[in-house]
Length: 352
Image 1 (cartoon, one colour):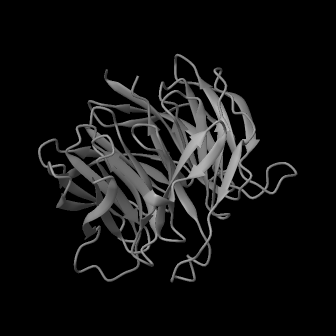
Image 2 (spheres, rainbow, N blue to C red):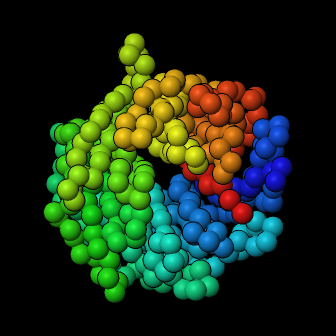
């Protein structure tokens, strides 16, 4: 296929319009918009269902109708990639910022940043979202009182085998695990992973069927690597996402691995770059290089399914930028291709 298609979420309160649909020419690297933007309030994170028939979006707000809550919305994807609204429902938590679905597209889970909670929802076969079935609120705080005075769940995802839901909490420096059964969340405290105080974990990436996971720390600008050893996750590596001579403020954001599993990438807001690492057979990372995103504030990025291009969502410079990936070294090469839009925050590619 010469073109890949995907979707961009944004902050829409100013001049943005919500969810955008784009195409990437895989020969030239050129980006273009298709369709009219979908109007929705602050879809700061979007996620495709596993079968890519549906798209789900958070509404990062503190009010949903008359309810003190953010929301989640569902869309059906047609044969051409267009979006049709299905329904929306409150998350029963404030400022949802992340969501995911299980492989059977029967359960959706959302992270509510400001209320420090995670919410679960059943999904209908037609893709629509049932009312919230369970909410679990974390307790505690961290040493950084500006950012960690309370829990802040920043990421919720399913483990690769689907047995557990994990919640990455920036406010309490921890990853917590839950079983989900018949609409009820059951905490598995024995699996809780405590991270270095003040590090501010943000997102998680699992590899090799959960044998390893990688955490990007927003506040300390680091990646921590964990390996499952005798049933428990143990820290095996922690390394910076920044050059050794960088002295400014930085807040790391997104973390994604390449489709071929050879490279890991992490974005830096402040240094305005993406760090590339090679992954060895033992899960350990080796820095390949740190590359400019040709803009400011890369809140998220996505790698197209063939692994040839990386798109950076530069929230602060209001653009999405295309970078070519060197297949041998993992290096990122500017293409000059970009599209302008207000405050892009999340990118999702379709693989079909």
